[in-house]
Every structure is written in C-alpha cells, then in structure tokens.
Image 1 (cartoon, one colour):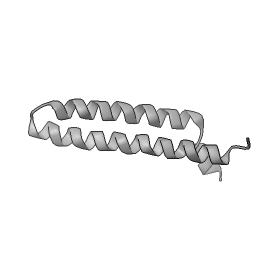
Image 2 (cartoon, helix red, strand yellow):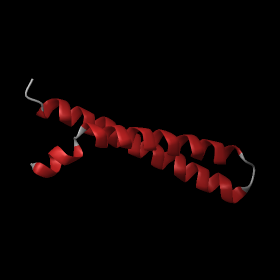
Image 3 (cartoon, rainbow, N blue to C red):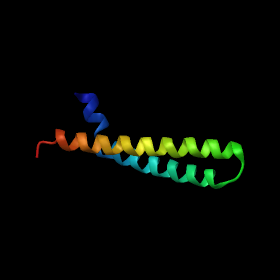
Image 4 (tube, rainbow, N blue to C red):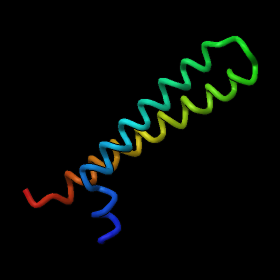
Length: 69
C-alpha cells in the first residue's frame, strides 16, 4: 500500500504529466523533420510521451479513489 501511496503522490503525478507533455512535444518536433532516422525517433518519443501522460492520468484517478474525502 505504501508503494501505491508513493506513486500517487501529487508531485509524482505532476512530474509525469509534465515530462510526458515535453516528450510528446519534442517527438512531434523531431517527427516534423524530414530525415528518416528522426521520423522514427520522433514517433517513438511521441508515443512514449503519450504513454507517460496516460500513466499520470491513471495515477491521478487512483489517488482520487484512495483519498479519504
């Protein structure tokens, strides 16, 4: 239970959300370049950023269910 509490801490959720947004933005900018290597890397970074942002949303929902309010 302590592990879940650590992951659902507000600072962890915010850091995940911001880092996911930054990764998705950088991946989109890399994908906009025309080089083939950059496009694959950009696509991977974009999807990884989306996955990290999704994880932060899930942890935010779990934190809401675990709150005592």
